[in-house]
Length: 328
Image 1: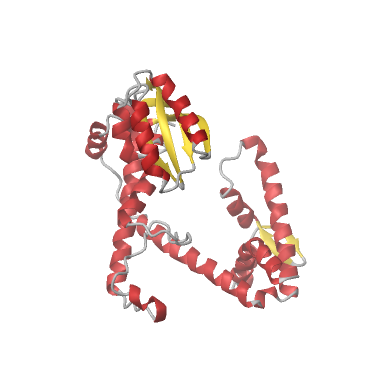
Image 2: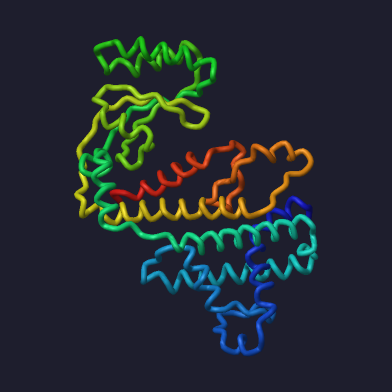
């Protein structure tokens, strides 16, 4: 087995290895009281482990729970068999795998502490909910569902000025129906790659920073916005009123405000920890020492994004994800 193939197996065995390590310190009294679901070469898999794995699956219909339990147990049995083989092949001593296990342990502990800190976040009161509802009519009282005609363009920096100039020219045409076909013809002449699409999105599914502008758009109006390495030209085809009353909105607003408070609490804790700690950057990283900014606290268990973002932009992204639950 090569190192690369070993590493591919790591994701399958890390959890099981952690379970094995965690179980080593249990006494005889613990074993006697545990509910055993299966034994694999003498090693126990408990009902608690099965239920814990099931909890990560999500909601399971009542009639399918027994089948789901058996499937989860079978996967845990397979996992334990792989652990046995990994230990037999001394993979648990491979430096790369030891490092991967330690990294996973660090992530789990960091996330556990952050979850504990965020559990103290206060919930929104009735006045805060009412204020948020009033301040965001485009999400609630005047909520709309939008239908767009889109052209997703593989846009380079050099193309941007030409594209904007062409859109300005096309937008002067009183016949709005002709704009998108004419833009497609222009892209073909310029030999630019593109894709066409029709998208229907409710207000809460749109970027918060653009929602106010989109709310004011009329049918036929254009919107230009980046999407990864591409540029999207959207034309509003239709918008339909789909308001939510304050009573309907309460649970969504409460969840949104609670998530925002959790994010604030986590960021405050990270700032406190950084202020109290002695942090020194060494070697090639020393130049970052003076200008280094705290990493976003919301998701410490995720790999760092190679494109550095500010705390504010990270917060907006997290809040935007929370808003997508509105109206569902």
